[in-house]
Length: 339
Ligand code: SF4
Ligand code: MG
Image 1 (cartoon, rainbow, N blue to C red):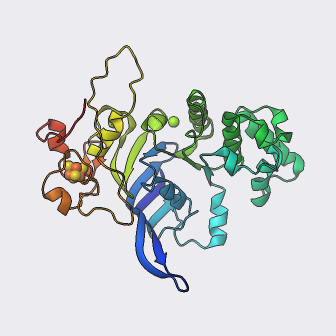
Image 2 (cartoon, protein in one colour):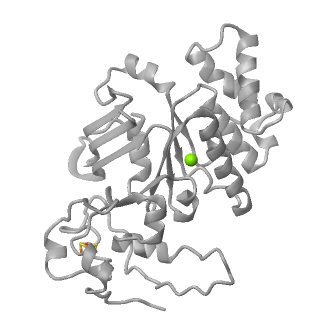
Image 3 (cartoon, rainbow, N blue to C red):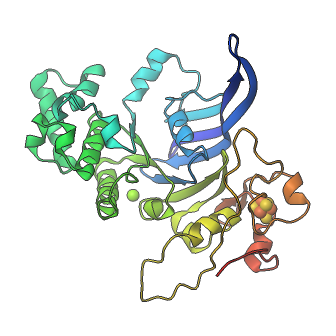
């Protein structure tokens, strides 16, 4: 099929244990609790949500870096969940991850060449040292780093350059899927666009498929074909990127969107400002009914507290809200909107 990745009813539940001598399980954190999504080959899926919503766990589960406790992850026709470690190892080369903080994910005692050669050796890529150097040189060039970078150490680079090293480490193996977990959130705002543009260019050149994870909607906007919004372990809305930013349908997406600054200072910002009451509830003890009902300015008695809304299609979007149509038409007004 045209989908490189198909995720079905994915669950990652972590046990909460208590005890001094003997641990006993007292509950479960449902970090990811029943997510369905597909990523077409060569496309970018942007995954956004507050920290603690489960988006990083979902990214790791997709690559089987965290093993799911339920559901399926299908990669290019291969079911990854339950795949034995030796077969998973062979798949790893095709699925790579870029991390948020390049400084903490790069070994400070290794120069760039040894950082990049490690994966090549582990996967038996390149006949000899010269062949591996050639692959590394081409990769450095692709990410916009000079040849002399080879002999330098991570601390000798700027934050943006270090993230380029992180990208090179992922790409040197020739992956098809790249999961980028907050790839620019540790960088200066002035550098963020450069790195996002680089990821976009590399995608076109190399035909890569991306899952880009961010807490900031603005970061994934231009790079994503489809954006999914997560709240407490579940998708609440998914839509083609331009559609989602033009007309968010789920109250949580609307609230996130209302916090995104308007890029043009000449244009008056007439959008509603939606302030959410309270903090993100604990994923160990999510609210019953709609998980967003404790913070939702549109929540209606008593259905929102009683019945969990399914993620259902509305036009090109999928939305998990009982009242999405009535909210869009203005028939149901928010309780509290601050100007
Ligand atoms: Fe808000 Fe109810 Fe929709 Fe949940 S189902 S998002 S509480 S209006
Ligand atoms: Mg693209």
